[in-house]
Image 1 (cartoon, one colour):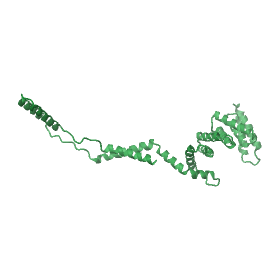
Image 2 (image 1 turned 120 degrees about the vertical axis):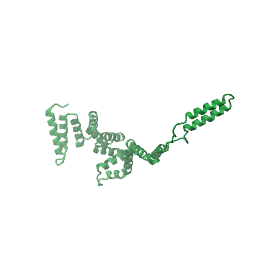
Image 3 (image 1 turned 180 degrees about the vertical axis):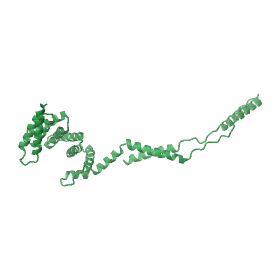
Image 4 (image 1 turned 90 degrees about the vertical axis):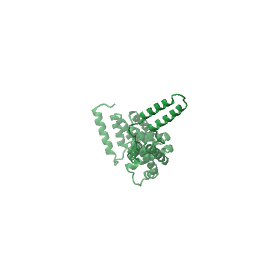
Length: 284
């Protein structure tokens, strides 16, 4: 980053030097000087000629006198360096504005800050009794975590956390990509498989919802009474507009939940809503 700033400042200084001190000739040759040079050169030629020398000299002098301007020509004075100050300021402001607009320097600065704060924020997120992260801190942790995972691609817990953070931050694409990466690294881990199926069913398109449902069905073979898996299956059926099947699955969830579970009310509301949709039209 330091080298980047040094190069940027050097380029700006070079531009200012070119702007303020343009290359100029050492001196200017005016019209009279050119005539004098021509006159001397012609005299030397006449010295070498044997005949008609006097007439040619008179004619040369007459032509020289006719070419002399009627008024004295005053050399133009260059502008004061002070007049260059507005141009210099304009160049600096314009170049700085274009640089800030197109270089992405703010994003680079934010990324560097996120990388510095990443260890402390990650430790807080992993500690159960630590102060909860705010949304801005979650965004910073997510950015730092992505940078960390570029060099630690096998960090499974990091991919899981990135997926959870992205779901909270409504970044569906990053969430699906993170959980998919964790699942690829450890396909036998049922917690990772559940998270991956959950994000596909909740945030995916129709094809991804079906993919998540297949993962859930495979896990249900060994845990047929799992409320979490049954609820995922019900949600998958709901998103595919198979409302009667969703109602049946939520009823199975209700049957296995404890009588004092706080989830029973919300599950019953889901069942009633599925029944209303079933009554209004056939399932797809």
